[in-house]
Image (cartoon, rainbow, N blue to C red; front, side, top):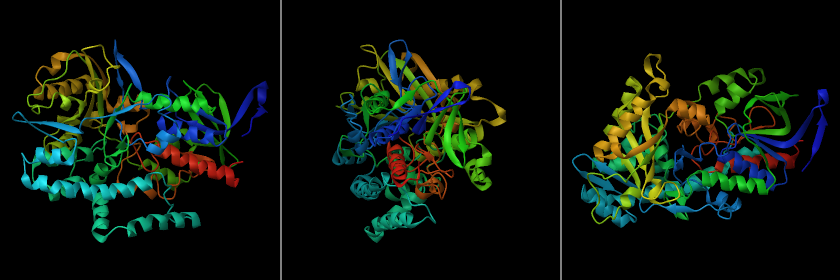
Amino acid sequence: MRDIIDAMPGDLTMQIFDIIIIGGGHNGLVCACYLAGAGLKVKVLERRSVVGGAAVTEEFHPGFRNSVASYTVSLLNPKVIRDLRLEHHGLRILQRPYAMYMPLPGNDYIRTGSTTGETQTEFRRFSRRDADRLPAYYDMLDKVADVMREMVLETPPNVGGGLIDLWRGLKAGNRMRALTMPERRDVLDLFAKSAGDMLDYWFESDPVKALFGFDSIVGTLASPYTPGTAYVLLHHVFGEVNGKKGQWGHAVGGMGAITQAMAAEARARGVDMELDAPVAKVQVRNGRAGSVVLEDGREFSARGVAANVNPKLLYLKLMDQNTLEPEFIERLRRYKCGSGSFRMNVALSELPKFSASPPGDNGRHLSAGIIIAPTLRYMEQAFIDARTLGWSRAPIIELLISSTLDDTLAPRGQHVASLFCQHFNPELPDGRSWDDVREEAADLIISTIDGYAPGFKRSVLGRMVLSPLDLERKFGLIGGDIFHGALTLDQLYSARPILGYADYRGPVPGLYLCGSGAHPGGGVSGAPGHNAAREIIADFKSGKLK
């Protein structure tokens, strides 16, 4: 749009951009692409030496590469994939043969199938009633998820806003009015109730309830019986893979393949990306966000600043507190973060051999999400342990062996696996640090898997261990929170991150939030970046950004 160089004191120059984006994670890249596509001059500042944020692929053991933090695909929005030409830039997503396999005590297992009928056949081994109720359960989830899919790429109304917000509120209300009364009650249940209470109503078998209940506590420091966890379950089912709703998949080359494709499109659109450029401060001049200062002292000026970071990082660390209202600051301090997540990547000499494997499966279960959490009570106890002891003595684990679908990640005949583990409290009792107990917790996780797949411990050639503290240091995930803030009713939709600022605009003119701390929340979706870009472009067109 414009190319202005202003003289600065000391014969230095400061190039003025239309928008500076803080953070080159996937949402920052998405936002940058849309803005540059509208003709704006965009600069992305990333503190690490690689773009991608938590969606990156790295070598963690000689010859072994894996998705370091984010590790599986479903929520990536199909519009973002199309608009940013990600497939043109080499992105390929492979669907899992089926979603989940859960080994059970006593040399048994439960799994989903590739079709509803196949899943019913599996469930019938545990409960004929549960198998019969499964289609109705799926139908209930699908109807609510379809409403959510329509709202993902929309800007929420600001409560108490003007005519635009009134229109947005009416539009959302019309979607609810289109539902039958039973369907509206389902929406209320899924937003307000616990997953445990909901699943106890729908099913009677503990393994069936556990299989579905796992999604309700992913990335959330909570019991499945904590109110609000039913929404977390819903949040994980409104995605799709290659046009198939509710499916999960793998990006060939790991999650970094997604963000590298986004970066390629950003470069093609003329986005200026700078790495190893940590931001120290957002400067407010004449009541507007006008520039950012890096830790090395360099300053870049812009007509607007969009932050792809946790709202707490933006407002409590990067902003001068005198530029914000005290009540706003206090609300941000109470913004809930901390997911109890513990991530490991392991190099394996061979595939694990679980004590109970589906007959005639031909190893397909090893390409599914392998869940160790046999009952809802097991998950609840893991949460109780984390609250009282620091971490669960019988941890919840999802094991995903990505090399079974993608042979580019490990040497021939060997494998890599992602271990997403819970519950591990970001704040340990007695003032202990995760630096002191990280390896002890990692050993427990490996031993837990070995109990279901004897010999697993022996097959581990190397490992990368990321405690909640490591996730915060490496990726800026406060408290290890993969969602940039808890997905609770008080932090969703018009209340994300705070009531009154749900439209991606901050309390200072020219300041925007384009990361997962904005609607619709966490996951590798690209939706917050897409939506924030739309609002920024609207402000340029209306003259609010000059």
